[in-house]
Image (cartoon, rainbow, N blue to C red; front, side):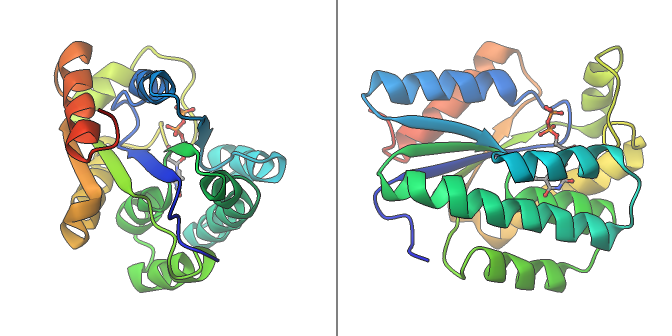
Length: 210
Ligand code: TYD
């Protein structure tokens, strides 16, 4: 597996309700305006097989280890079929969640062993593939819970208690502390326009859009 030299790999993270979606679309638009070819994708998912695994992970009860094995199986298929080929073609690959979500949700949220997650990360990502930039939408769990209440029927994760999301948020903070250069932390506890201006500033400061 080769490192993403030509393409640009950007991931988006945050607890459920942090409000990533509209900004991912806006960023895709900004890159396209610069003449870049953009692939928009998500995890778990992004391939027919991985989308089937997503349905199971999001809906079926299972223990944390099964969850881990399924999200990394989905990730492997996604990397092989979508992520690596797009990066090799020099495209911009925008991915709604990636391995940081496994550390945050399965690791911090569900208490699964982080060393094992680290082994799987190295294994599935060939020891080299990492996002060029991870945009972390940081929002207090209490605010996210208010935003989610009244939204569509919650999936298995969205129906977790507040304490779970507090742990997940802590998991993201730890991941950022372990690799600060890769992360841009966005204060997601603001109106959408202010959040977008932080996202826009993050990609500009990295020289990704001019
Ligand atoms: P999400 O990305 O929030 O999609 P939607 O906007 O459609 O709800 O949902 C994906 C869920 O999967 C989210 O709750 C986090 C969870 N997840 C994990 O638990 N581990 C992982 O490795 C990944 C990628 C996601």
